Length: 184
Image 1 (cartoon, rainbow, N blue to C red):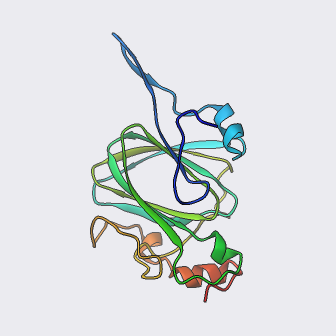
Image 2: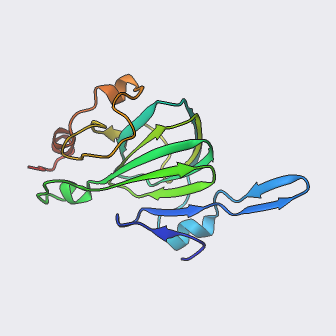
């Protein structure tokens, strides 16, 4: 698998820095290869999107049950928060899910498997390419509150700019109950 991928303490969450190939014209960085998907066991890339998130905004916490996300930071700096809710979805009792907070900068690439909640707080304006394994139709869009005390992610501030969807997201326990498991 190597290709520069580094494991984290959340199973399946992997990180790598894009390798720049520079000459007098500029820089080329490979954002994704089909062989990486096969090597990582995440299935084929089906759709790619890009977002620009303004400084101070938070997108999340989002959760997919069928879709793996691969984030590629094109420009800017962001703070990623991740929470492994797969044990809760499987009916395990946990006081708190396994979490990970990390800074992402230009050229970082992050694999986020199904069942791992994720959010991105833009520290500067952030352009993010996200590559996904399922074509978007809205049926795999789930989420929970970014500031849920059960998750207790270490965010860089207390008052992010949020969409209405993220502002009204339920607590994790309610989100898991809606998905058919009992986290209590």
